[in-house]
Each structure stands twice: as structure tokens, then as C-alpha cells.
Image (cartoon, rainbow, N blue to C red; front, side, top):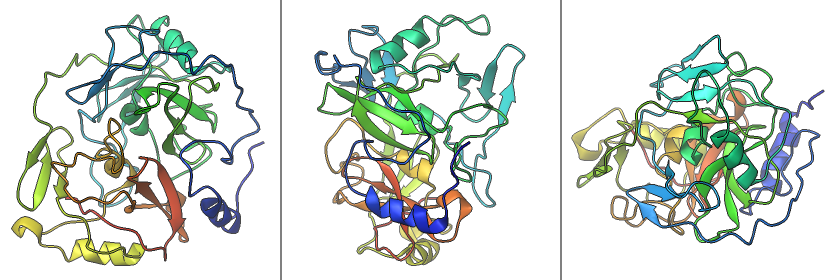
Length: 334
């Protein structure tokens, strides 16, 4: 049986692990993470290639994982939000995401893997007549997060039996060859941890092929258009930190670039502008100059609750949740 957390306990947990960049100490299901060792002896991953990073040579030397969303970012089904989650399940155990075009493994083995084991698991898998499965990137796995629910924070009709667990991604941690990104589906957010830890794995594939290199952002004076996601971002962040409701009012009243209709981004939308290939602040600084390495509000409340909401830390790229009266920065989107 999975534990159900009260609002008070959740608030306390929010304060307990608001700091720190690794997953240790996080609340979770009664499945222990194991240390398999050997995670720190791997050679450093190759450098970025137009927003992508090569996997370690211990995996597949010529594999590329996207560090950016090359498609619209799906959102939890909430009024007023674009691109709500839409999934189609097939008879051969595959889920097709109608928004991103990605194809996902539907059912999972009751087994845990080190980072290298997760890479091998996906590359050796045959499912639905396809042999080109792979470990998803950080932003690909983030696209499955459903912030309207927890335990697990994923559509349980499309992905039944998903454990409220840590799931490996193929994205290496910047500057640390012994660590990689994961997504924690107990609540739903990304962080990094040692590659020797044993986590769950859900494999992905795509028929779209490798996207040709092109400029990611159309940088203007007051706004920045992401050509792939279609999101138009305020270039400057709020001049000061604001509570959750203050952030919403700030965006609603904004007229940047002579445009109206600005809003606070959702958690998954905000995670699309995290630059996992750089240090704090983890964002493309040419596009978004003077961004502080601080928390930024999202509009996603904690499982549609009333006491907590999600934010993204641009010092380490992790998503966390905090009390609504806490003052954080905000960058508006439309």
C-alpha cells in the first residue's frame, strides 16, 4: 500500500529537501535504492552538439540525447493550458504521445538498474516490432509528468502499474561524469544522482529522426520565441521575488513586446528552458541575460492543492515545491 501524505506533512517535506541537488533523503515508496558501485569510473561524456549531449562511450558511442524539447511540451489537463496530455495505446504494449510524437514502453519490469544497465536494457529491447528503443533524455521523460496527481505523477490509464519511483534518463549531469539526471515520479520532478544507484527505467523511441541543427531561440528585445515548443518567453525575469499570487498578477498585467496574454509557465514548460549543459544559472544566457541562479515560480500547484506549488531552481535545474507565500522570481510565457 502506498502512503498518502497530508498537506501538513507535504509542507514539512517541502522544507526538508528544498536544498541539495541529489535525490538522497527524498520521500518515496518502500523500495530501497541500491548502490551498485562502479558509477564513478566512467569517462566524462562528450560535449554538447547543438543542444544535444553524447552518451558515455560505455553505452553507444554515436547516440545523441536531446537536451531541448523538439516538440510542444504537454501539460496536465487543466483549463486554459495548451497541449493537454493525449495518449494512444496500442495492442503491442506501446503508448504513443499524440503531442510529442514519442513512443513509450507501456508496462515495466519489476526490476532496477544502474545507469549503464538502464542504457543497455533499452538498447537491447524489442517491443512492438521495433528494435531502436533507447533511454529517454531528461526533457523527454519530463514530458510524461502529470502535475495534477501524485504517487505516481503520471497518467495511470496510459501507463498502468507505474511505480512511484525514480526513473533514469540518458542525460548526463553537467561537469560530473559520475552522475546523471533522473525523474522522480512519486511527486514528479527531475534531479541528478550517482550512476551507480539503481532506479526504474521506461524506454522511448521516435520515428521523427534526428532534428537538423538550427537556432533554438529567436531572440528579440523583450521576448524570446522557442521555435520548437512554440512558447514565447519574457526575456527579462521579474525585478524582484514575488509570492505565488503576486507572480500570477505580474504576468497577467504584463505587456512585454507590446503583447498581452502572458501567464506563469507550468512546471514542465519552465523545465524546457533549463540548460542542463551549463552551470548556474542553468539557462541560455545569451537569450536570457542577467538571470539569477534562483528559484522561479511555475503555475503548477501541488497535485492541484491549495497550499503548495512547484518551482524550478536555476542554480541546479531541479524542480521542487514550496509554500505559496514564499517569494520567488517569475519569468512569464505566452
